[in-house]
Length: 244
Image (cartoon, rainbow, N blue to C red; front, top):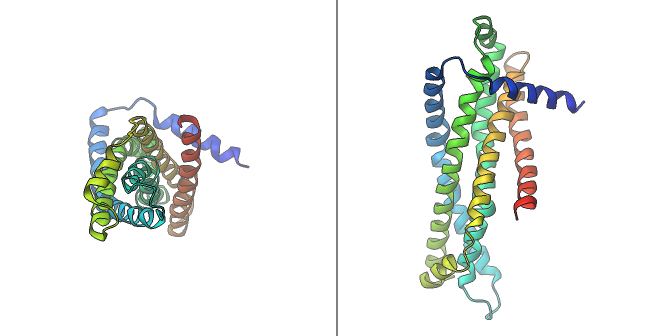
């Protein structure tokens, strides 16, 4: 039944957002998770963003076969594509594989080795202690990663376009600054926050309810990535439909 996992997920979130026992302990965990999720993912996000921008620029230039279309359109398309779709969605899918699998395997290992049971015996709210810092850290750092991704994507497209001769520097900059709608940034940040919540909460749910041993931990990690990616793509469509 689809409603049974959904009900357990909602009840888990209710336990996660219960009032913490000691904020000092949670604060230290939040900072540690911010370093792990944010700084630890910066390298792969940077590499992917630069090449996404470069490929988008080259392919857009290839498709502009009409002389009546100004080359500045290349910069405009890259800007809007990076802000609305490439940076938030592609970054979220990549982070679902990196961060999501890590969260699911970490919590799943604690479950099968009975560390979570030990926390509950000591009277600690284990969902809040284990999951809440990860959610707060992800919701804080992933939008920052998306902003960096947008900048690097546009930079990669600029260098690829000018180096290949597909567009001049002046035309590219003109396209970047023409008819810019700041609301696209709002949509981008809404996507980033929701995607960050999906990645951490779904992965933590899969890990928290792991049963068995090492094999089941691996299966939970795989399910966390798959379900997170599907949920990201579905919510991407819903957000676009509601806000655009």
